[in-house]
Amino acid sequence: MDQSWMQKWEEVKNIMVCPTDLETYFTSNEILGKKMETMEVGNVSLPSGKVVVRDPLVSLNANQSPYFIQAPTGNFPVRIAVVKSEDWGDRYAVVKVEFTKEKPVVYREALVGIEELEGVAKDDYFGFAVDAGLGCIADKDVLPFVDRFIDEMDVNNIYDDYFADLFLQSYKAYPKNQREAGDWINWTIPDTNYQIPMFASGFGDGTYPVYFAYDANEEICGLYIQFIDIELALSDEDEDEDEDGDDDQPENFVFLKN
Image (cartoon, rainbow, N blue to C red; front, side, top):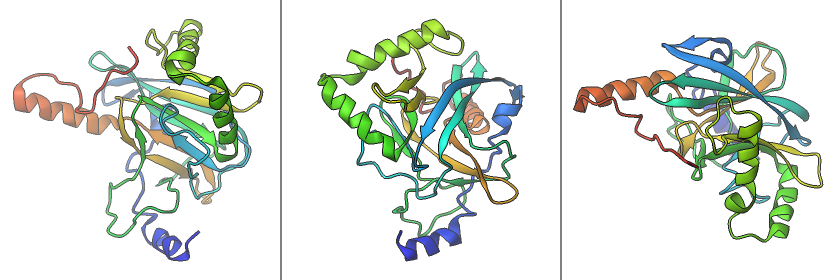
């Protein structure tokens, strides 16, 4: 790790924090009038603790750099906080990897260690790009097995020819909080025991922040992907109503696989 970058990170790490207590998305039954539910989607395999969060259909490969913060190693439960809305439908707001049961007191953005930190201001974030409507959590040391499997599949479209059926099976087995084509799977890479949870990305394509959560002892207790800031989404919705009188969806709203 470049020492000058690390020095800059130490200067800005408490600026690049999430303004929202993301754990409340998992502990509240309602946020700003929107009903909340939590669902479990199994474990993620982190044999090295080198975490990678990416769009699995676009940029999940062995060349991807993990976050520079070392996470705990092992298999950890993954939960999704679902915001339920007549306007939006059932949308995945936050995804959480639970490393410990300790309460988070600060959420610092997860970075790979090459970002340009000069001039970073409050509420800025780098995030990860979603271009195919999905996110996933994986381990850097697991990604070569993904590459090998996809190479051996030798298909034109890995989603249409392989993953689409798995998402459909997920919907049939667990229809709650999913659309008919399926919105999440917990993929075990064939011929391995490694699990990679995949899930729909909130309102669709865009750039979404990822945070490591720290407890009162400055120990890492979780990893959180924020797909929807409910307060911000409602604020955008109100602005749309003020401008044209219509109850529009948030600006980056996209329906994906359906």
